Amino acid sequence: MTYSEAIEYLQGLRLFATAFGLDNTRRLAALAGDPHQRLRFIHVAGTNGKGSTCAMIEAIYRAAGLRVGLFTSPHLVSFRERIQVNRQLIPEADLARLTADVRAKNGAEPLTLFEFTTVLALAWFAEQQCDLVIWETGLGGRLDATNIVTPLASVITQIGFDHEQWLGDTLAKIAAEKAGIIKPGVPVFTATDDPGARAVIAATAQNLGAPLTWVDAAAAAQFPLAVGLAGQHQKINATLACATVAGLQSVIPVEPDAIRQGLVSVEWPGRLQLLRLANGAEILLDGAHNAAGAAVLRAALETDFAGRKPTLIFGSLADKKWVDICGILAPLAYQIITVPVASKRTADAAELAQTFRALRPAADVRACPGLADALNACKDRGFIVITGSLYLVGEALDRLGQACAGARERELNEWSGDRKSG
Image (cartoon, rainbow, N blue to C red):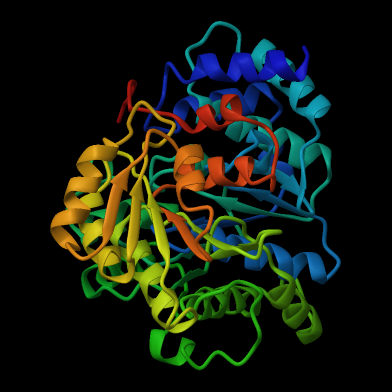
């Protein structure tokens, strides 16, 4: 199987977009030799901050000399971003080889893309003899395919509203799904600040005899170490990452220098990522796809970029609460360009523009047929913010020459909940 053939096969798995339940993943993992039984994990769930927290924990342990696997989703440009060892993407040849191997083991059984990818990643990390795997949930936690592992620690970042049609319409219900990663006796570390969500996590931890460590937002605001990721909100993610590392010191000792080095060198593309172009323009990329993420972006623009007059390029998926996101971001921009996202689930650019006009009458608002047209329309602007969807950020990275894989691999982020089970 070639890499192109592997991507084509994975594309076919998108027909079975989501399945809630662990039986299928356990079955396939067993056929693959249960590679997760030979690995150690830190399992991370949450609504916002998951990726950044995973990246920080990974960077710390890598700086400490460990061989660290990193499993995240979605990807921005290349599907291989989801499966990394010491921040090196799985090579194309190995992805193709393992795709063929896992497909052969599975036979003709129906399988979702995420189930398949989860087992493929486990096989790669075991083959690479990783000392530790930083293991991010896909959707929720309780019935997420990643939940077949028993980790060294469970980490739950901030909880907010997202994917309510599957996870629940209150933060307490969403927290119950995220808390599903908590295992008996396994320590839990969380930065959740909503009282209802905190109560659910606390009750789950107590019922399972899992030691619980809270990260306090007020204390996190005074976090003393330098962090390589932009934004004041990263302080709470860094505090959570450090609390996790501290809690596991008896299992995996880490020197203070490794913590400092890991945090200052950490990278996580597409989240308050500032690009400086050859013509002197600056483009800020941020995948703010829910209200909490938009609030973080707004805070960064008001503090780190105070006094700047950004042009906002905005696109969103239709199933997101994009009206709320527009309301948060509209007051900051003087020129707003809306675009469709490269997805069947895209919100209509004209409808987005109409909403922005109502929210920000003084702004120059227009809709463009695509990101390329939007970039051309504001090419003379000095400060551009591209946001609203990670899909859009991935396309921007591709078009701006920061990565190369193309739309075919970005399409692998597509899913619609076609197959679900309890």
